[in-house]
Amino acid sequence: MTQSQKQVTRRAVTYTKGDIVLFRVPEKFWLGQSGHTYIGRVERSWLHPDTRKVHYDLTELSANRARAGIDPDYMRLLPPADAMHDIDTAPLSEPDAGAMTPAAVAWLRRHLAQASSTLPAPR
Image (cartoon, rainbow, N blue to C red; front, side):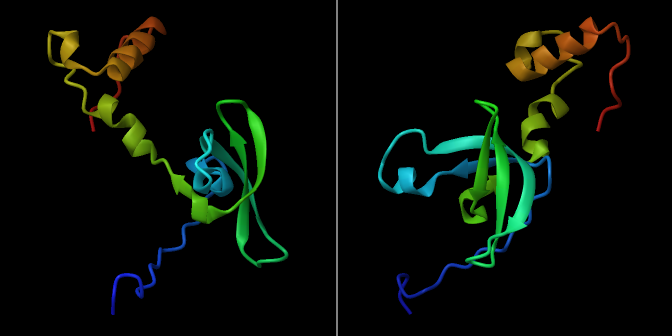
C-alpha cells in the first residue's frame, strides 16, 4: 500500500467549555489567504444537523469575537502545561533573573507585586 492509499486516522478529540484551542478557517488556509489561524476559547458544542458531527462555538480571543460552527478537524488543544512550562521550570534559586524566561520573570514580578510573600509549592 502506498502512502497516498493509506488513510490517515486521527483520534477524535472532545473539547470542553473553557478549553483554549488553535483553530483554522480551512477555506482561507487552502486558498493561501492570510488571517486563517486563530486562538479561541470553547464556549459550547452542538451536533450539526447535516453532518451529524459535533461542532463548536468559540470566542476568538484576539478580537473577543464569537465564531460559530467550528469543525473540530480544524482545531487543536493548546494544553495549559505547555503555556505554564517556563514558569514551572523557572530556576528560582538562580541569583540572575536573566536565566529565567521573560514570562517567568513577569509572573514572578506580578506575584510579588500582589503583596504575597510566599511562592507556590514547587512541582
